[in-house]
Image (cartoon, rainbow, N blue to C red):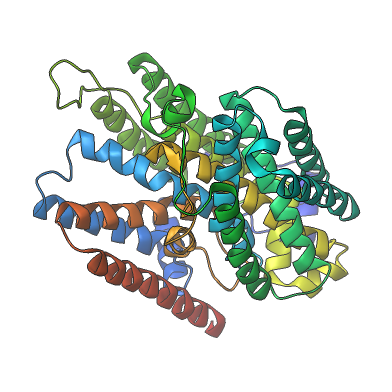
Length: 470
């Protein structure tokens, strides 16, 4: 099946040197193999590694592939995976955000404080800390206006409004507050990096320590904010969709993917542009359906160990991750903003000469990362049902950055997808979960996780060197 272009469009295509040669399935496979040999590996190493890890832990542990453990694995890894999805935007510019973990902890602490203090942040923080907190939000809003990051300014001002209003506790309001605080933190980080010109490593390392102190100030040494009694907040990571809702999600996900992929395929055919052969496109859709349908069926079975309790349905974290994946992919692939991110990450000077506001792009990705980190904070706080002074600390950041890099996002900028964070997050979740079932100590878990990350960074460096030599 091939499209027929008009004489005018054919002439335009010829003028711009666009390749309109149709590919057979065999040629497409050989072209993909050539790209792999040239160093364009994408997420293939992570997918192969994930498959190998699943097989190994399945063979070594009887409890690994049980329904209960599979659902629990998804919920355990979702928080760090979501933080990694935001960090992809930063890594695409060749920057780093070492403060994303503790920034998410600040967001979690504010959210939990608003709930346990019945909306009275002033009473929870004390006069001095509260006014410094509100002042910081106002400054963030002004800085966002200066950099023309309108969403950051609006979200920071919303946080000011919630803080000053003393509104009664409401789970949706508290989650909104967490995201707004995350956006304000991202504005401050982005301003220091893009406008002041400080290296992102130095800025975010300093803020990593700063936000740790802020969390401790909010919660207190040895303190804890419990949110497990709030049904909505607790259900974010621990609840499940209904059986009917799970099948609707499955149908929407598969049909939506099919419509997008086939739609793009047909458009390119009609315009006379090169596109993947139709059998390969259909094979991708079939592969998605082959994963989604059995997984939905399995998760809809009763996985409770108690005869008097029924636990079934797709965990809520699955649609949350899917929505963020679709939104992030759309932004990077289908919007001018996304194209500007790739342009700046590929060559900042060339992007500047092309008229792109490099400083604005550089600042905005930190806003995206911190806002997404707040969403990750909501998920991991929901999973444990509380927020303590260690929120967002320990290995949270390392696992989030590791997830993005292991999945295929380059540390050197210019190459990566939100999907990479999902694959890498699954790899790390499987490692942590599988070793836990094998009753391995924390030392072994850290060693193996570190080696997996080192391997991913090595593959990235070697593939870039191979690509540069071509």
